Length: 299
Image (cartoon, rainbow, N blue to C red; front, side, top):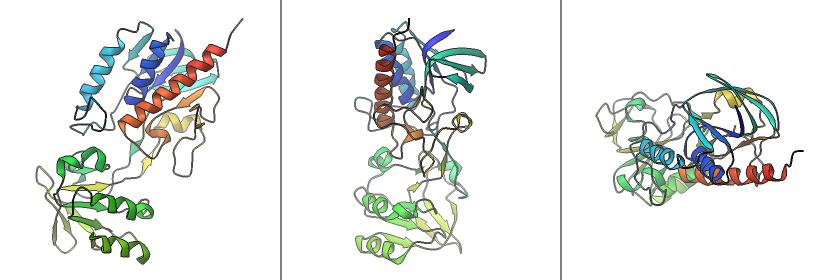
């Protein structure tokens, strides 16, 4: 089967791109095999008209709306690899193969779980990454932010913004070295600092406290943690150029990667990650691909 564009990933970025391309009458295949990065989240926020919607309901509605565009096809299938070149890609699926003139990657990122006993129980509701996504519902409660070597550099601005939602915020260094110049502003702003290592998170249904080495417990109902992220295996196999943080490099306007004809949108290519950002990014990539295909007049 031949397509104008194959989209790899069926989250907000991929579905938004499919919508724009369907409306532009391009023949599109969306390959969506999961797993969902936000599967543990009960709600998603900051998406106007859809604030508080369950992630699975968001995808159901998006797929339902895409049904009216007859040139858009969605398959629950994995993409194993992509070979060929611009205008002549072969996309190898878990069940056969298809061809495409362009490929759009909206595969998101993989979170590498932190070594914090009890984190699995609370991930996605008691332990989260974004205050804009989860802060309002837990405002004015005791919060925490656990540092990692990767997050120490931006600890100060991130931690200080948390005070807008709660005045009871503890920064857990958890063995991460942080210079005195960074610590002083945190303490002046009213943030509490805890240098003892985290022993475990509460084994209650909802997060209630962080237990430290030695047995002391710090009240905490929402913990922010930024685990290291990595690309999905398909992106790694493609050998795309990455930036110093491991995100796919794209042309700022076109969203094209270092491989001509392969585009990327959403979390896999930007540090500022949110559903609405991914959707907007997908729309831009779709418009750029459509323009290129429209100009690529073949004899």
